[in-house]
Length: 355
Length: 226
Image (cartoon, rainbow over all chains, first blue to last red; front, side, top):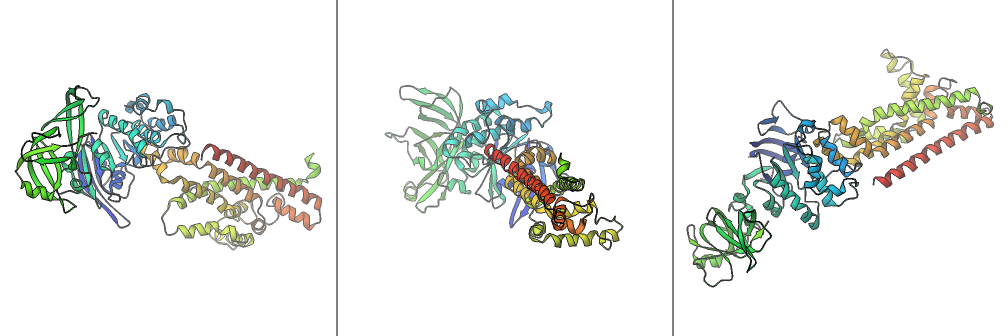
């Protein structure tokens, strides 16, 4: 089960050359700076770029090759545009049903009630789309796409045009989609925090090419890629809830590398969570500290050390059990501790964010 | 009662004018819609040239336009030379002239309407399984209805008001090619101010009514759909 894409498109001095494959399930982020071709690639998958030569095979079905080009209106996709592009002359409900009515009855897997509930749109159905907020409009756009029961969901920076409040409002819905949808989602974004909350897999794009592809947690901690050296560089790990310490208002999480204590969160026993640990929040000790205020101290081994943009800093990659953490320390500390690949020590995690 | 005021010949001119305007408007919608669509979306290097040609009737004296159409349709013209029918001094000839004459009044409002909708909304419709005709009818038409209304009204009203082109290619055959504007000219020439008054008044009232309706409806659409 994969989405195999191979495209070549040249336009106005820009060239998109892509030959890659992403998993046929979960959320794949198309990530990169603006102008790197991620939206163009998404449009190629949708069939909105007829000039693109190439091949597209989605879970075994060929949508495009040398002899065939299935046009956008006959591809089983859902497309959420950055600007929404709702139909201003139709009500919320009619927008939602526009695509639903156009697919054969036996293919309607997603039902209107279900989509409205999933996206919290029940109370808006009779409203005009010009009267609702930006965040609500984007939820309608997502619902409209889902109601075509697509086999791939394509999302082009669905949050980029929204303010912080609308983003916060829409995020839980996106996460719910991620948990409940069994179809692959291609999610274009240039915001790493969005991507690390939602994506499982990543295509890192640069100048119309795929620079790297792989599981998100691998790509964002790879020392040879720019993500690990960005200001907000962080590792993302999957964890599950072990229990709560009521006396100290803490929640204990277990992951493939140990346990983490975080401020108490309203989570259920054994619930799966995704946590984000910033490189700047990880310190390194050669011995286990005895008298430290930092709760999370994990046995770690140095994988490698690389230069960071600031000459006074280095980035240390640490193996903690089966996961990789990033630690940004000063060059002086590096010399002082004489860290090198293989050095055993402890990672002190000052702060953990549940995403 | 109306016959006390209008002679049968003037009545025929009035009827012919309305017929001509109606047929011309329909033809213009059929030809002008795809042309306006193309102009709104093309990146072709011919776009500017085509736009200029479409706008020519706005600045050209109608007699010049009429003269060329007459040459085109006349007995020595290319259409007849190629075995086509004789179209000068016929209703069909009038329609051809009027279509050219009123072209910008239909194409320009449509082009503006199409351009303001942009391609994104249509792409959204395509991604929701609407085929080309489907999305034209269910998205493009409703969203550009102000443009269509303006195009129809201006196309019709402008054709009702034409004079020079008709005079050149239609001549002045009562009941066949004589339209109201020419009938009025004839009455004034003959110092029959009474008849000229009646026809002029009718045309004035009709034109005002059409424009008034257009602005009223457009205002309503604007309020509902910004």
